[in-house]
Amino acid sequence: MKFIKLFFFLLLLQILQAQTVGDTPPLPIQSTDIYKNSNMYQQDFLYLCEGLIEFHVNVFMNFPKEEFNKQKETYYEQLARCKNENEFGKIANKFISQIKDGHAGVAINETAGKNFIYPFRCKYLVDTLVIMAVSDQLPFSLCGERIKSINGIPIMDIEKRASLVYPTENYVSLQNYIMLRINSTEYLKSIEVIHSDTESVKITTYSGKEFEASPNFNGIWKSEISTKVLITEKQSDPFTYKIVKEKSLCYIQMNGMVDRRIGEMYLDMLPFWQRWGIKTWGFFGGSDGIPEVYFDEFLNTCIEDIEKNNIKKVIIDLRWNYGGNFIPGNILLYALGVDKYKGFSADINVSELSKLQRGNLESVKNTTDANDPSNNYYYTNSTKWTENIKKRFNGDVYFITSEWTFSSAVLLATIVKDNHLFKVVGEPIRERPSHFGDVLFLKLPNSKNICTLSYKLFHRPDKSKDNDETLYPDVTIYKTYDDIKNGIDRVYEWIAAQ
Image (cartoon, rainbow, N blue to C red; front, side, top):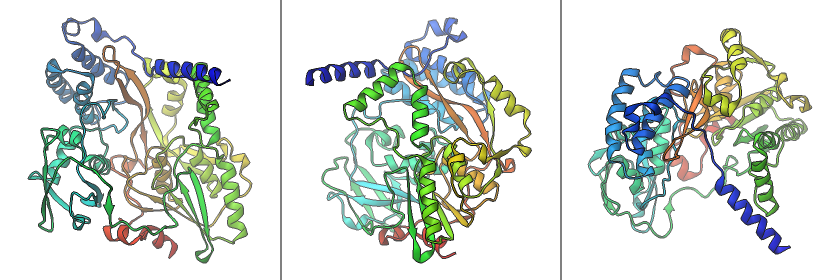
C-alpha cells in the first residue's frame, strides 16, 4: 500500500509540475518585421504591449496613448540588454505600473538571485514609516523611531521611485509595498537606493538619530509590540465571532469572501485532471485550500447567539479581508436586514482572451450596458443560499476597514458606505473603490512569463466619487505606535462606546 501511495504521489507531482496557466492568443504584431528582428525579450514586450491594448479593459485611462507609445519605445530599447526572465519581468512591471491597475503585472520569482535582509522592520502609521522591530544588531531604542531618509534619500523621494517600479492603485497600496520590502536588498536595488547585495544603509530619523545597518539579519526580532490579547486579534479562520455581553455587542471578524460552497464551486470549474490532482493531494493529507465553514450556517449560529444574549450591536471587521467572491457579502447584507441596494456597474472588455478564460461574456456586457446604474438596484434575497438564513438582525451595525482591506471586501465596504446602510469606521483602504478587476492570464510566447490583467472596470454606486483614490470611512481612526505598544484597538473601543 505504501508503494502504491508513493506512485500516485509522484504522478501527482508530475501533473502539478506540468500544469500551465494562461493563454497565448496570436496577435498581429507577431507577423511584423520589428517583431521578427527583435530578441526574445523584446518580442515578449511587443506582444505584451499589444496584448494589454487588446485584452485590458482600459489601458489608456491612466496611461495616455501618446505616453504609452513613447514609453514603449524606451523600454523596448532597454530590453536589448536583458539577460533573463526575472530581469525582463522587472522592466516590464515598470511599464505596466503606469496603468495603475493593482491586479496587473508580470509574475516574477522574487527569490531568484541574492536577497538579504536588514535587521529592522517597518510599518506606515498614517503617512510616516516607523521602525517596529529590530534584531540584536541594532539598538532596541530605535523601535518607534520615524524614518526621515535612507542613504540621504528622503522617504518622499523613495515613495516616488517605488511608484514608478511597482503597480499600485493609490498611496495606501504604495505604502504597503514599501513597508513590507524596505528591509530587502533586492527591493532597495530595484528602486536604486543601493547598488549591491552587501551595501549598508544609513538611516536618519525625525528625532535626529542616525544609524547604519548591514544586510546581515540573524537572530530574532525584538519589538515593543504588546503581547496583550485583544478581542479583535487577527484569527486564521475566514469567519469568527465573539459575544461581548457587558457591551451588548457581537464582534464578527470576516477575513475572506470564500466559504466551503464557493470553494467547491470554483473546484468544479477546473478541468477534470486539476480536480483529480487536488483531491489526490487531499488523499495524502494535503489541504485542498477550501474553508470548512458554510457562511450561511455560520451566520445562523451567530444570529441565534445574538438573540439569546439580547445583543443590540454588531461589528463586522474587514481589516484583514483579502476578498474572494462577493456572494458572502450579499448573504451578510441580507442577514443584517438589507433588502436592496444600489450596486456597482462595470465596463467589460469582451476579447479573445476573456472568451478563452471566462466564456462568452457578450450577454453579460449587453445587460450591464443596458441598465442605467442610477437605477441598478440589487435585491439581496436573489443571492444564492440566502434562503438558508433563518433569522435576520435589525440592530446597529458598524463595518471596520484598514489598509489591508482588498478586492471583494472593498465592494462590500463601498456598497455599505455609498448606500448609507451602516457606518464604516477605521482607515482608508489600499484599492480604489472604482477599480480594475477580474483577472485574465496572458502567457508570453517566449519567456512563458504570466502577465495578469483586468478585463473589467468597476464603478462604485456613487459615481460622483468615481475618481476617489481610496474609500474614506465615515469615521477615520488611525492606529498609532502607542496604540500598538499598549495593546489598544481604538476603532473597536470607539464603536463599543457608541
